[in-house]
Every structure is written in structure tokens, then in C-alpha cells.
Image: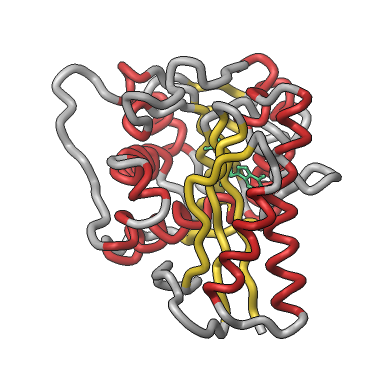
Length: 280
Ligand code: AMP
């Protein structure tokens, strides 16, 4: 396993790499969710690049950029155990955004303005800008993104399609702890009591799925059933709960044929997101 920190060096590495390259962009503090993406990338490509970069552009001024968990040594140890041909790309913010950097890539329209985009203005602009630059550096054959961040995956797919980028985007199902909590680097913020309370997200999704399986198709009723369940957890504060069209991400007003059910919930100070897709 090799670690590269400069943009020039990763370009030179790519110039010399004749085979297919699978790319997994991450912010590090890796867990089994990330490693599932890495394993899929390793199975489908000759080489794998994992970027570890906490991207300042995608954090709002009152968000957790400064305290976002970082542990490069542990990340490298986890990746060293995975695949012979893994390259870690770990640039500094100054390397990615040198003085004078002034370009942004933005997917316009409601897809970036609703849900996470409404709650985190500028977030997706930061994501698409960094992902675009990373794609230009790594020139991947395939890039792997988690369905855990369903809206991010939809936004990246849109950018790749709109700009005719020459790579395949692969979505990977959410990896969960045995008790249902979606794996996330931010779970480390949770105290033991909060960790228990955080189960309310996956429970609410499971509740919606069970209602769906019993034939409930009213989007507003699915939404309020989840809100009711979350309201019973004193440490939880809902940021949003959404029942939306899985393709457009527009909120469904009446009957749903399929639905992306998603939510952001504060557990204490920690904001967690989760989602599931319901299909007939
Ligand atoms: P992050 O480091 O949180 O930016 O995540 C890097 C990539 O890993 C993104 O594509 C995420 O959607 C994906 N990811 C994060 N958590 C999970 C999970 N629990 N299961 C599957 N993919 C995940």
C-alpha cells in the first residue's frame, strides 16, 4: 500500500497505471462501511485509490470541520489489510485548494436545494467541486459511493451525466452495526446513552418498511408514523423526515409507488442521517 499526498504525484501514478482504477472518495476515520466500498472496488478493478480528505468546502461555518475525527495511521492499517494494490491519496487542504483557487462545480436545481441541501447550504457545491477535482486527478474507471448518502449519490450521478464524465458511478448499500445503526465516522461523537438513542433512526425506517409491507402507501401517513416514533426518544430532535420520489427526490404528497424515506436527526449535538428505499 502506498500513500500519496501531492496532486502531481497522484497524476503521475495514474499516468503509469495501465489497468482499470476503482476510486473510493472518503473523509477518513474509516469503518466497515468504507471498507465495503473498497472491497467492491478491489473486486471490480485492477487498482484501487482511496482518498482521505476532510473537505473544508462541504462544511458550513457552524459545522464540525475542526473536530471531525481523523486517524490516518489507523486508516492506513485498515487499508493495508484489504488489497495488495491500494493507493491512499491524502492531500492537505492547501494541496487541493492552493492560494487563488477560485473554481466551483455546482449541480443546480432542486436536487441540491432540498433535504440536505436545504439544511446545509453550499454543502453539495463543496462536494461536487472536490469530487470533480478528485476525478480529474485519479481518472477512475469506476467510483464507489454509499447509498447511506443517497442524495449525494443522486447529485454525483447528475453531475457525471450532465458533464459527460467518462466513468461509472457505483452505489453501494448501507452497512449497519448489528443493532441497526448505520455506520458513520460521526458515531464516535455519541456518548453511550446517545448511542442507544441513535437507534431511533433505523427503528423509524424499519417501522416505515413494516407499514409499507402491510400495504400503507400514503406518504404523509408514513412520514407522521416515523415522526411519532422519533418523538418518543427524548434525546432525539428531528431536522427533517422525508418521503420522496427515489429518482427526483421530490416530496410525495399523496400515494407512493416507491419512496426514498430519509431523515436527519440530532442525537444531542450529533447530526445523523439515514435512509431506505421502499419499492412495491
Ligand atoms: P464519508 O467518509 O462519510 O464521506 O463517506 C465516504 C463514502 O463512504 C461515501 O460514499 C459514503 O456514502 C460511504 N459510506 C459512509 N458510511 C457508509 C455506510 N454505513 N455504508 C455504506 N457506505 C457508507
